[in-house]
Image 1 (tube, rainbow, N blue to C red):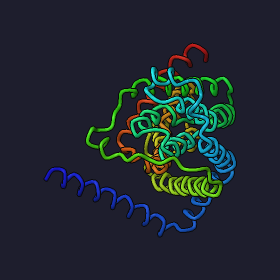
Image 2 (cartoon, rainbow, N blue to C red; image 1 turned 135 degrees about the vertical axis):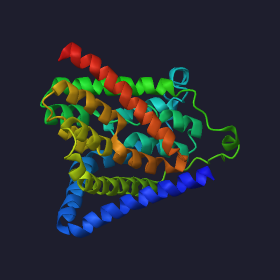
Image 3 (cartoon, rainbow, N blue to C red; image 1 turned 90 degrees about the horizontal axis):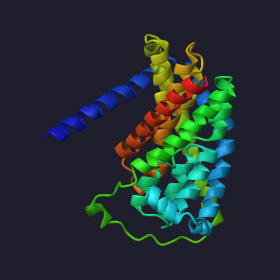
Image 4 (spheres, rainbow, N blue to C red; image 1 turned 180 degrees about the vertical axis):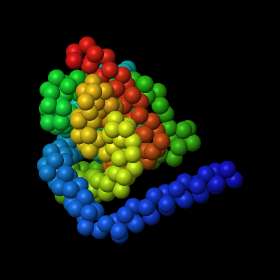
Length: 311
Protein backbone atom coordinates (compact mmCIF):
# COMPACT_ATOMS: atom_id res chain seq x y z
CA UNK A 1 0.00 0.00 0.00
CA UNK A 2 2.82 2.40 0.92
CA UNK A 3 4.61 1.55 -2.31
CA UNK A 4 1.45 2.25 -4.34
CA UNK A 5 0.94 5.61 -2.59
CA UNK A 6 4.57 6.51 -3.20
CA UNK A 7 4.27 5.66 -6.91
CA UNK A 8 1.03 7.68 -7.23
CA UNK A 9 2.65 10.67 -5.49
CA UNK A 10 5.69 10.51 -7.80
CA UNK A 11 3.45 10.29 -10.88
CA UNK A 12 1.38 13.26 -9.65
CA UNK A 13 4.48 15.41 -9.12
CA UNK A 14 5.85 14.42 -12.53
CA UNK A 15 2.50 15.20 -14.20
CA UNK A 16 2.44 18.66 -12.57
CA UNK A 17 5.98 19.36 -13.80
CA UNK A 18 5.15 18.31 -17.36
CA UNK A 19 2.03 20.50 -17.35
CA UNK A 20 4.16 23.38 -16.01
CA UNK A 21 6.57 23.00 -18.95
CA UNK A 22 3.72 22.75 -21.48
CA UNK A 23 1.93 25.85 -20.14
CA UNK A 24 5.17 27.85 -20.36
CA UNK A 25 5.67 26.74 -23.98
CA UNK A 26 2.07 27.60 -24.90
CA UNK A 27 2.23 31.07 -23.29
CA UNK A 28 5.67 31.95 -24.74
CA UNK A 29 5.92 29.90 -27.97
CA UNK A 30 8.44 32.13 -29.78
CA UNK A 31 10.72 32.24 -26.74
CA UNK A 32 10.81 28.47 -26.31
CA UNK A 33 11.20 27.75 -30.02
CA UNK A 34 14.37 29.85 -29.86
CA UNK A 35 15.52 28.09 -26.68
CA UNK A 36 14.96 24.71 -28.33
CA UNK A 37 16.95 25.87 -31.35
CA UNK A 38 19.75 27.01 -29.03
CA UNK A 39 19.85 23.52 -27.54
CA UNK A 40 19.96 21.90 -30.98
CA UNK A 41 22.70 24.33 -32.05
CA UNK A 42 24.74 23.50 -28.92
CA UNK A 43 24.43 19.81 -29.80
CA UNK A 44 25.10 20.24 -33.53
CA UNK A 45 28.18 22.47 -33.21
CA UNK A 46 29.75 21.15 -29.98
CA UNK A 47 28.65 17.56 -29.32
CA UNK A 48 27.95 16.04 -32.74
CA UNK A 49 31.32 16.73 -34.45
CA UNK A 50 33.42 15.35 -31.59
CA UNK A 51 31.27 12.59 -30.09
CA UNK A 52 29.81 10.88 -33.20
CA UNK A 53 33.23 9.90 -34.69
CA UNK A 54 34.30 8.56 -31.28
CA UNK A 55 31.10 6.53 -30.97
CA UNK A 56 31.62 5.07 -34.44
CA UNK A 57 35.32 4.19 -34.15
CA UNK A 58 35.10 2.85 -30.60
CA UNK A 59 32.25 0.57 -31.69
CA UNK A 60 34.36 -0.61 -34.65
CA UNK A 61 37.28 -1.43 -32.33
CA UNK A 62 34.99 -3.26 -29.91
CA UNK A 63 33.46 -5.26 -32.76
CA UNK A 64 36.89 -6.39 -33.96
CA UNK A 65 37.36 -8.15 -30.63
CA UNK A 66 40.96 -7.12 -29.96
CA UNK A 67 40.63 -4.57 -27.15
CA UNK A 68 39.70 -7.09 -24.46
CA UNK A 69 43.08 -8.75 -25.12
CA UNK A 70 44.97 -5.75 -23.73
CA UNK A 71 47.38 -6.90 -20.98
CA UNK A 72 45.63 -5.06 -18.16
CA UNK A 73 43.33 -7.85 -16.97
CA UNK A 74 45.16 -8.50 -13.67
CA UNK A 75 45.31 -4.79 -12.86
CA UNK A 76 41.65 -4.00 -13.61
CA UNK A 77 40.41 -7.17 -11.85
CA UNK A 78 42.39 -6.35 -8.73
CA UNK A 79 41.63 -2.63 -8.59
CA UNK A 80 38.11 -2.38 -10.08
CA UNK A 81 36.87 -5.98 -10.28
CA UNK A 82 36.42 -5.62 -14.06
CA UNK A 83 37.92 -7.27 -17.21
CA UNK A 84 40.78 -5.73 -19.21
CA UNK A 85 38.40 -4.12 -21.74
CA UNK A 86 37.41 -1.69 -18.95
CA UNK A 87 40.88 -0.10 -19.18
CA UNK A 88 40.33 0.69 -22.86
CA UNK A 89 36.79 1.90 -22.14
CA UNK A 90 38.08 4.24 -19.43
CA UNK A 91 40.76 5.67 -21.75
CA UNK A 92 38.28 6.32 -24.56
CA UNK A 93 35.76 7.83 -22.13
CA UNK A 94 38.30 10.16 -20.51
CA UNK A 95 39.57 11.26 -23.94
CA UNK A 96 36.21 11.80 -25.63
CA UNK A 97 33.82 12.70 -22.79
CA UNK A 98 30.13 12.12 -22.10
CA UNK A 99 28.36 9.89 -23.10
CA UNK A 100 30.93 7.73 -24.98
CA UNK A 101 31.84 5.64 -21.92
CA UNK A 102 28.22 4.61 -21.34
CA UNK A 103 27.79 3.80 -25.03
CA UNK A 104 30.89 1.58 -24.99
CA UNK A 105 29.72 -0.24 -21.86
CA UNK A 106 26.35 -0.96 -23.49
CA UNK A 107 28.04 -2.13 -26.71
CA UNK A 108 30.41 -4.44 -24.83
CA UNK A 109 27.51 -5.97 -22.92
CA UNK A 110 25.42 -6.37 -26.08
CA UNK A 111 28.30 -8.20 -27.78
CA UNK A 112 28.74 -10.53 -24.80
CA UNK A 113 32.16 -9.20 -23.80
CA UNK A 114 31.14 -8.22 -20.25
CA UNK A 115 28.49 -9.26 -17.71
CA UNK A 116 25.95 -7.01 -16.01
CA UNK A 117 28.14 -7.02 -12.90
CA UNK A 118 31.02 -5.76 -15.05
CA UNK A 119 28.79 -3.11 -16.64
CA UNK A 120 27.57 -1.81 -13.27
CA UNK A 121 31.12 -1.58 -11.92
CA UNK A 122 32.51 0.00 -15.10
CA UNK A 123 29.81 2.69 -15.11
CA UNK A 124 31.22 4.02 -11.82
CA UNK A 125 34.51 5.11 -13.43
CA UNK A 126 33.96 4.99 -17.21
CA UNK A 127 31.26 7.68 -17.35
CA UNK A 128 33.44 10.76 -17.66
CA UNK A 129 33.89 14.10 -19.35
CA UNK A 130 36.92 14.82 -21.54
CA UNK A 131 39.88 17.25 -21.68
CA UNK A 132 38.46 19.21 -24.63
CA UNK A 133 35.46 20.20 -22.51
CA UNK A 134 37.08 20.48 -19.06
CA UNK A 135 40.38 22.18 -19.97
CA UNK A 136 39.37 23.87 -23.21
CA UNK A 137 35.73 24.87 -22.83
CA UNK A 138 35.44 25.25 -19.04
CA UNK A 139 39.00 26.18 -17.97
CA UNK A 140 40.17 28.40 -20.82
CA UNK A 141 36.86 29.36 -22.41
CA UNK A 142 34.73 29.99 -19.31
CA UNK A 143 37.10 30.63 -16.38
CA UNK A 144 39.78 32.13 -18.68
CA UNK A 145 42.39 30.03 -16.85
CA UNK A 146 44.21 26.96 -18.17
CA UNK A 147 45.39 26.33 -14.60
CA UNK A 148 41.81 25.95 -13.38
CA UNK A 149 41.14 23.69 -16.36
CA UNK A 150 44.01 21.37 -15.40
CA UNK A 151 42.91 21.34 -11.75
CA UNK A 152 39.38 20.38 -12.78
CA UNK A 153 40.63 17.67 -15.15
CA UNK A 154 43.02 16.12 -12.61
CA UNK A 155 40.26 16.14 -9.98
CA UNK A 156 37.85 14.56 -12.46
CA UNK A 157 40.20 11.71 -13.43
CA UNK A 158 41.35 10.93 -9.87
CA UNK A 159 37.81 10.96 -8.52
CA UNK A 160 36.67 8.61 -11.32
CA UNK A 161 39.38 6.11 -10.37
CA UNK A 162 38.54 6.37 -6.65
CA UNK A 163 34.87 5.96 -7.50
CA UNK A 164 35.66 2.76 -9.40
CA UNK A 165 37.41 1.33 -6.36
CA UNK A 166 34.43 2.20 -4.14
CA UNK A 167 32.00 0.24 -6.33
CA UNK A 168 34.28 -2.72 -7.20
CA UNK A 169 32.28 -5.15 -5.02
CA UNK A 170 28.85 -4.27 -6.39
CA UNK A 171 26.85 -7.28 -7.63
CA UNK A 172 23.54 -8.00 -9.32
CA UNK A 173 21.05 -9.73 -7.03
CA UNK A 174 21.39 -13.49 -7.15
CA UNK A 175 17.91 -14.09 -8.57
CA UNK A 176 18.69 -11.67 -11.42
CA UNK A 177 21.99 -13.36 -12.23
CA UNK A 178 20.21 -16.64 -12.88
CA UNK A 179 17.98 -14.94 -15.43
CA UNK A 180 20.85 -13.41 -17.42
CA UNK A 181 21.12 -15.14 -20.80
CA UNK A 182 24.39 -15.80 -22.54
CA UNK A 183 24.77 -13.27 -25.33
CA UNK A 184 26.12 -14.56 -28.59
CA UNK A 185 28.94 -12.41 -29.90
CA UNK A 186 27.87 -10.48 -32.98
CA UNK A 187 29.88 -10.37 -36.18
CA UNK A 188 31.33 -7.15 -37.52
CA UNK A 189 28.63 -5.28 -39.46
CA UNK A 190 29.46 -1.74 -40.64
CA UNK A 191 25.86 -0.72 -41.42
CA UNK A 192 24.72 -1.78 -37.93
CA UNK A 193 27.54 0.24 -36.37
CA UNK A 194 26.63 3.37 -38.37
CA UNK A 195 22.93 3.00 -37.51
CA UNK A 196 23.61 2.38 -33.81
CA UNK A 197 25.99 5.35 -33.52
CA UNK A 198 23.59 7.67 -35.39
CA UNK A 199 20.56 6.75 -33.26
CA UNK A 200 22.58 7.18 -30.07
CA UNK A 201 23.85 10.65 -30.98
CA UNK A 202 20.36 11.74 -32.10
CA UNK A 203 18.93 10.73 -28.72
CA UNK A 204 21.67 12.78 -27.03
CA UNK A 205 20.72 15.83 -29.14
CA UNK A 206 17.03 15.49 -28.26
CA UNK A 207 17.80 15.33 -24.53
CA UNK A 208 20.07 18.40 -24.68
CA UNK A 209 17.38 20.45 -26.47
CA UNK A 210 14.72 19.36 -23.97
CA UNK A 211 16.87 20.33 -21.00
CA UNK A 212 17.59 23.77 -22.45
CA UNK A 213 13.81 24.27 -22.39
CA UNK A 214 13.52 22.92 -18.82
CA UNK A 215 16.19 25.31 -17.51
CA UNK A 216 14.44 28.25 -19.19
CA UNK A 217 11.16 27.24 -17.52
CA UNK A 218 12.85 27.39 -14.12
CA UNK A 219 14.66 30.69 -14.79
CA UNK A 220 12.10 32.83 -12.83
CA UNK A 221 12.67 30.59 -9.79
CA UNK A 222 16.45 30.70 -10.19
CA UNK A 223 16.33 34.52 -10.25
CA UNK A 224 14.98 34.50 -6.66
CA UNK A 225 17.94 32.48 -5.32
CA UNK A 226 21.48 33.60 -4.44
CA UNK A 227 23.69 33.50 -7.53
CA UNK A 228 25.95 30.68 -6.38
CA UNK A 229 22.97 28.48 -5.47
CA UNK A 230 21.10 29.29 -8.69
CA UNK A 231 24.14 28.66 -10.90
CA UNK A 232 24.91 25.40 -9.07
CA UNK A 233 21.32 24.18 -9.57
CA UNK A 234 21.57 25.06 -13.26
CA UNK A 235 24.63 22.83 -13.42
CA UNK A 236 22.85 20.01 -11.60
CA UNK A 237 20.27 20.17 -14.40
CA UNK A 238 22.55 20.82 -17.41
CA UNK A 239 26.35 20.74 -17.20
CA UNK A 240 27.35 23.31 -19.86
CA UNK A 241 24.90 26.00 -18.79
CA UNK A 242 25.84 25.52 -15.14
CA UNK A 243 29.61 25.72 -15.69
CA UNK A 244 29.21 28.85 -17.80
CA UNK A 245 27.22 30.54 -15.03
CA UNK A 246 29.56 29.38 -12.23
CA UNK A 247 32.55 30.84 -14.08
CA UNK A 248 31.07 34.33 -13.59
CA UNK A 249 31.07 34.15 -9.76
CA UNK A 250 33.30 36.72 -8.07
CA UNK A 251 34.67 33.98 -5.80
CA UNK A 252 36.70 32.04 -8.41
CA UNK A 253 37.70 29.27 -5.99
CA UNK A 254 34.08 28.58 -5.04
CA UNK A 255 33.09 28.63 -8.72
CA UNK A 256 35.80 26.08 -9.56
CA UNK A 257 34.83 23.76 -6.68
CA UNK A 258 31.14 23.83 -7.62
CA UNK A 259 32.00 23.39 -11.31
CA UNK A 260 34.11 20.35 -10.37
CA UNK A 261 31.07 18.71 -8.77
CA UNK A 262 28.87 19.62 -11.73
CA UNK A 263 31.33 18.19 -14.29
CA UNK A 264 31.77 14.87 -12.47
CA UNK A 265 28.10 14.53 -11.55
CA UNK A 266 27.29 15.37 -15.15
CA UNK A 267 23.93 17.02 -14.60
CA UNK A 268 20.52 15.39 -14.92
CA UNK A 269 20.69 15.90 -18.69
CA UNK A 270 23.88 13.80 -18.97
CA UNK A 271 22.51 11.21 -16.53
CA UNK A 272 19.48 10.69 -18.74
CA UNK A 273 21.69 10.49 -21.86
CA UNK A 274 23.80 7.80 -20.18
CA UNK A 275 20.85 5.87 -18.76
CA UNK A 276 19.26 5.87 -22.23
CA UNK A 277 22.42 4.34 -23.69
CA UNK A 278 22.71 1.85 -20.78
CA UNK A 279 19.12 0.69 -21.26
CA UNK A 280 20.26 -2.68 -22.68
CA UNK A 281 22.21 -3.33 -19.48
CA UNK A 282 19.08 -2.54 -17.41
CA UNK A 283 21.11 -0.14 -15.34
CA UNK A 284 19.15 0.92 -12.21
CA UNK A 285 18.64 4.69 -12.30
CA UNK A 286 19.20 5.01 -8.54
CA UNK A 287 22.50 3.13 -8.68
CA UNK A 288 23.86 5.19 -11.57
CA UNK A 289 22.71 8.45 -9.93
CA UNK A 290 24.45 7.39 -6.71
CA UNK A 291 27.65 6.59 -8.61
CA UNK A 292 27.63 10.01 -10.27
CA UNK A 293 26.81 11.72 -6.96
CA UNK A 294 29.81 10.16 -5.21
CA UNK A 295 31.97 10.95 -8.27
CA UNK A 296 30.91 14.60 -7.99
CA UNK A 297 31.50 14.82 -4.23
CA UNK A 298 34.98 13.24 -4.43
CA UNK A 299 35.92 15.50 -7.35
CA UNK A 300 34.78 18.63 -5.49
CA UNK A 301 36.82 17.62 -2.41
CA UNK A 302 39.97 17.07 -4.49
CA UNK A 303 39.43 20.43 -6.24
CA UNK A 304 38.93 22.08 -2.84
CA UNK A 305 42.41 20.92 -1.83
CA UNK A 306 44.04 21.79 -5.16
CA UNK A 307 42.62 25.32 -5.52
CA UNK A 308 43.87 26.32 -2.08
CA UNK A 309 47.32 24.95 -2.90
CA UNK A 310 47.74 26.26 -6.46
CA UNK A 311 45.36 29.25 -6.81
